[in-house]
Length: 117
Image 1 (cartoon, rainbow, N blue to C red):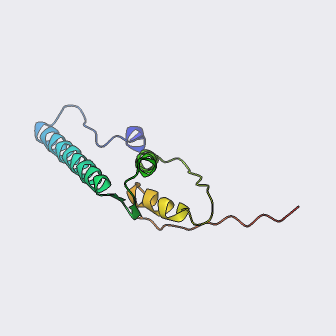
Image 2: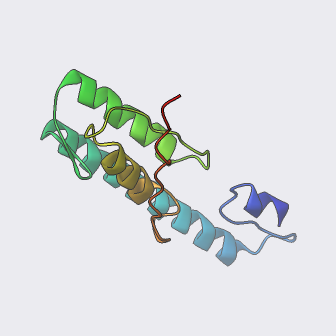
Image 3: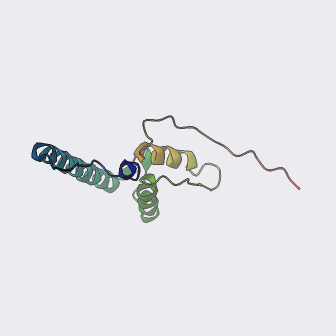
């Protein structure tokens, strides 16, 4: 059970039940196939200049898309910084939509403005 919490997809017990093994392998194959399809669709959208709600095909935007793709698959906390109007919230929503937490609520958090010294 500890392995499942660490990310294992399934497990088998001894003696190995061959029908169960076939089911697990078929499910794994379908999952990998779907992940490949999703990756191909994302690549196609990127070529068209779209990635989630983000639009842009320039090399800097491609770097942003790469970063989003990398961090969305982790459980790490992410800090987005930038000037007002640069799209931080859209990036946060895109990361959320691509993450394992996408079925949960997206909670918008805004830091309180700092007071002048």
